[in-house]
View (cartoon, rainbow, N blue to C red):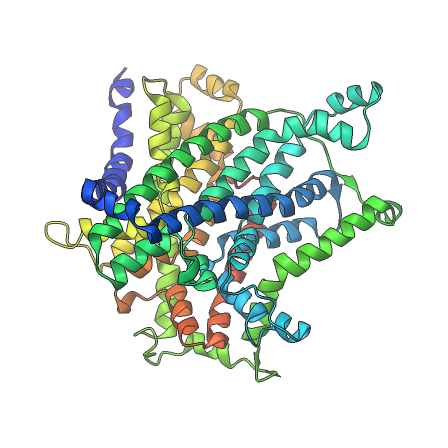
Length: 539
């Protein structure tokens, strides 16, 4: 009885953190931006209307392109087993957790004026500084979302449905369209909405690859605040962006509910071995052609960055990697590379600790308690997923620039920002792992005298260790990749690797930027190889 009365107190630290470092800054933005005159100014200006429209258009285009590239990959990973599959799946996941600035770097190395593809073709392919480049980069970035979510669901389709349809004469595309595709809709819709949200809130890719001609709302907010110092217009744009992204978030959460219910099916189809005979068939040749396309499009930017980090003027060198352990002051980013690497990893580990600490009580409450407004509570604690890093940075500037909450310039504020950005992914991974545990195990523990909390800590949490590991890896990778919020609130002493890469790009020094990016890429790849060993799903 005592635990039932005091149980809700375990949520208090998590709620206090979210209120102080997410809802309060967002509320200040809403207060500043919900001015009728400011909103009217933005909505009546032709330039801002074009920015808002283009932001939606490029997000739709990016989503459609990502689905077109990702669905065949989801089919291959769901249906076939082949040597190196786990490594390839982990490698294909790396783009999603790479700093978006590194994605831009890869595209510059490939498609720039002296890029590898440009030199190979003998002319500029017209990818950089265009809407085409933005769509391609977003597809590269979000490709893993579609592949992993849809392939996971595809493996859980009960084969009896397809067998019954085949017995009635359905074959080939008719079988896929009328039987398989409807059962894949939850995965396709959820992955499409997540891709759309990430593309809608994208910052570095439109800024660097699109340029100001193809700026998005995120770029416009950054420009108004950091360049023009116009907080009024920036806040109004942020309010418009928040209202749209929260609406998209609601649709995503509804699709995620449907996806989670479908994913809970106990049927799990084991992939079949890909034989040489099947590989030489028409279907096999199509899969080979698709794989070549994936290697060229998805892996080429990663390998281009790796190649660039190991060469100078066409010759092999490790000079750029020596920069990583150079303790000399670098005027480009007002710090030194060694401290940038050190602070990046320190922020990453701190984000992991804090994200897990906040997510555990929330996951416990959503898993165990029934209370009025539970669905609304679930949506509210997931709202950070629908907020952009730039808006969070703007909120922190407004909230923590004076006493008694003078935190601007503090390393703690960077960790708090990273935690707010990473925490929804940790909560999702942990909730998914807890949802797979049979209720009978908890009931057995309680029948032996354990109370509700004790059975959770002693029985369910150890069984959800895979979800904890996935959440930890994801939080670490998201912290390493973060640029937008960090750039708005950091001081030079606490420069991170992503900020250093951005500074190198600004001065056209691609070698040291590539070396730093390779370090982040290697760490992310190692993390996702660990996830593949656990067998847990990320999304």
